[in-house]
Amino acid sequence: MPDSGLSPDLVAQAKAVITANRRLGRTVAVAESCTGGLVSAALTEIAGSSEVFEAGFITYGNAAKQSMLGVNAEVLETFGAVSIATAWAMAQGALKRSGCDVAVAITGVAGPGGGTEKKPVGTVVFARACKGEDPENVVADIRYFEHNSGRSDIRRQAALCALELLMPDASPLGTP
Image 1 (cartoon, rainbow, N blue to C red):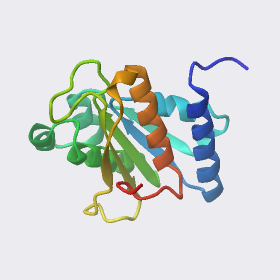
Image 2 (cartoon, one colour):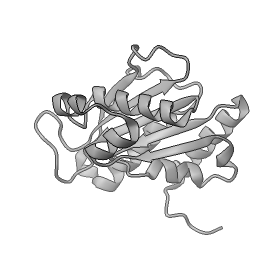
Image 3 (cartoon, rainbow, N blue to C red):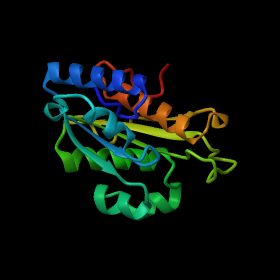
């Protein structure tokens, strides 16, 4: 089997996501910023993932968040790209534009630069939107990953969290 370059924990979690969602007939989409396609890569590493994984939006820049996902410029200007408001808008946009059952969004500061006092390196925001749920009921959370672990590890940890949120039995965001 060729080496994908993905960590074994990412591939294992992606396999669990594909298996669990396939069993329920659910389709998933992701909107990625700081992970730059890592979640999509992990999901597509799994044979048969096309039955579950419908779309991956890599919206690294604000213009892409606006044009591809419909994130409002005022949200970006007011709250910034790394915010619950932006992550929520990204998740809603991915859900709407993909037609999937569930969408997860990831936006953050992977480093080594780009952090601020309020949003240090390692700050990552997640949001999950599900078909049929009230879009006014925001489901999002901020996580702070150890910035000393490096850019690649922050991205890996963020991807693992996003994959966990795609599980049908995932805990609501913001709960341990």
